Image (tube, rainbow, N blue to C red; front, side, top):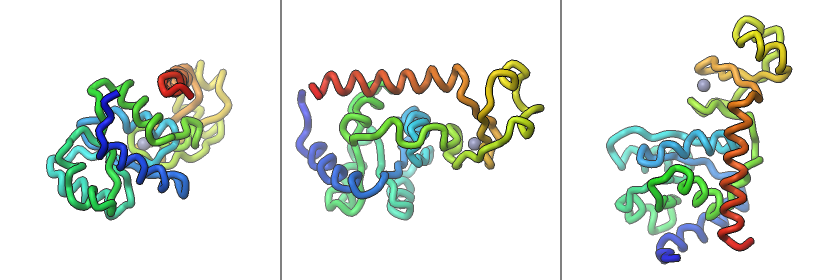
Length: 184
Ligand SMILES: [Zn+2]
């Protein structure tokens, strides 16, 4: 594997931080698909869709977030190379490869806080009773599911249905594949 030394340095620096507390992320628009996957795992993840790198860096710094990006210019910035701000360079164009790289190299826990964050807006979900969602979910869902969560911002209702299960199964496959490739 042609691992680039600066990348390894970043990972080592990040590794120490991950041990102390759960990282929060800011995902650049060029790796935007990572946002949903990280939120499924329960990692607080902001999506950056602005055009100006300086805004990305400023937000990351202000909110204590690790930058995930494919932009090599960002990781060359002094604030990153000096270690004041963490950034992780994503190497693949393929979203599944990206997720595997992130899980593997940043030692993420895919069971951190499942079912905790809105996949669209990153808000902490709130529990709702079955009666509260009666008119908000399809009848077959109401009949078969007992646990519901609502996003206080966009008001999407979540339940552990087939879509959710399919996504968590895919996530598990990323982790298994990463573990096999890493020989662990
Ligand atoms: Zn939401």
